[in-house]
Image (cartoon, rainbow, N blue to C red; front, side, top):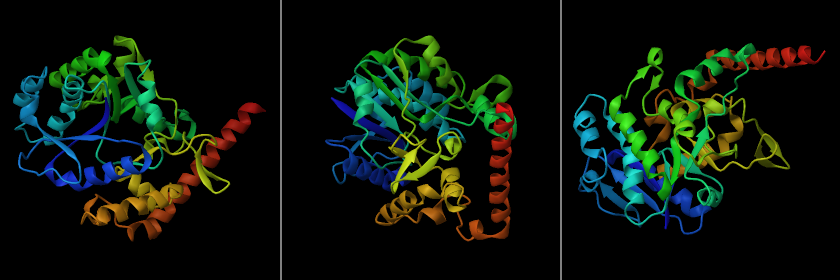
Length: 315
């Protein structure tokens, strides 16, 4: 059996419902397993499959992670550290292929091929796909070196990937911090080591996966015959609607994703969520201001600078 999964706090249930609806719309026979970390009384609704943390007690590293992070001032650390543990729980309880996605992901095309990748691979990772040209965009290069090559908002595993997930859980238990001098970035930077430590780790080459603010330059969006394509080839598969992604769409740096954002906003409104008021720094009026107009123009000049540099290299 195969399934998608995600981890939420109770207040994020509407986001999980919208994620589930997007999966059903674009995938045949989609399942979504939802781990709720802070409430055992949420009722199953609309066919969602809910799990609670007490069910994970016998899963390796759960008790250690719970003791270390469940009652700290950083509740995100507990949720993030539970990713490999929840994946292993599902792999040990009837599923042989599991795709974890953050609850703020939104699917816009069929993603069945990701499960197919787990026929011959044990672990799936999605790169951040940053622009790593230091000329004109050194911040992007430095950001991926600090934050990691792969985004922890998506990871896939099959039953042969259990040991890799145990290792990731152990690393998360060891340290869950952002300390650039130690090469740490929460749960995420450890993913850089997976292709080195384990066999069967596949890096997803489809650049329509995990579209977000961090890949706006390297995964170029454009309309071809009226349809959105990434680098002229790839259809968008799923979008990571982080606060920064939403901000980039609203300030028109990533305007070709705007129709999907509007679709996402409407879907959340049906669940009584006002996305723009809820998200940090997503006041649309602000993005129509003079300040953001100047910032947008600076971004365009940066692109011109990189173009001229590449042109000079060819001369």
